[in-house]
Picture 1 (tube, rainbow, N blue to C red):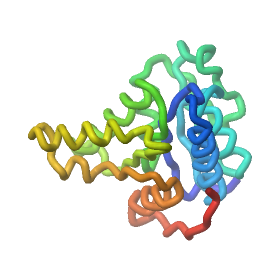
Picture 2: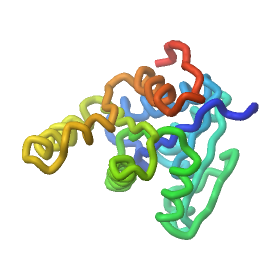
Picture 3: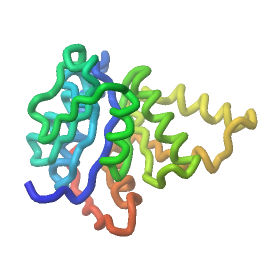
Picture 4: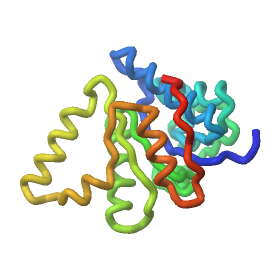
Length: 197
């Protein structure tokens, strides 16, 4: 394919989760990235939502870049169908490479690894280490509790609203992806509205 017009880092579970809506939205996100000539940067696995979003991106004509630590090659079933598969030694290398290769970040449902990746890149943003947009896709109410707790943190004086404003949270995958890509910088062309979900 031609050079991607944008690159989105997607954090998500290496398990599928119990609700079919999680896999459905992972597929829809991958399709949107591929149909808009984009590039997916993700954790490099074939299992769970990770595998779903990667395969959907690939089948829709998008480019897929996977980054996986050697220790997880077997556990997360490294995806050999990536356009680029980088096998690194540590999680620090993985996250740094994923951040460098991305214009924006999006968290789908996932577990502790997804939480950690999202919070780290959010922390980097508040500290000025990057100015790339961040998104949280709240599927089937999965992140309702987290978003409520974050507001508790603001109300308790440990966070400011400006920090919350750095994170775009939405239940609408297409609208959120469009916002992230358009906010990624002045060199990003506007993405036309085209429903794929």
